[in-house]
Image (cartoon, rainbow, N blue to C red; front, side):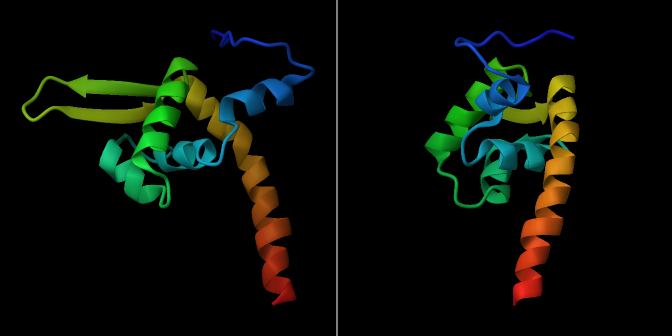
Length: 114
């Protein structure tokens, strides 16, 4: 498996991973692409609240990092689909325990307080 070369020095693996997934929307984009490939408009609907500019920027960055694959189909009108690469699938698997922790301790804790 290839490693992503990013500028800067890191203090630990978490620091390096956060550089790849940092930002408000990247983890939600990964979550949306976990089930299947999506077109840009589909992603925009699945990740409600993200602007077109930010979504395009984050998709470009995730593609450069080898997390997301952009497939352009030679059709009229043009069709572009985004999907997770094998590295993106591994990243989602690594994020799954964090999601479980959030559901149990944050979301579940909020329901207990209500």
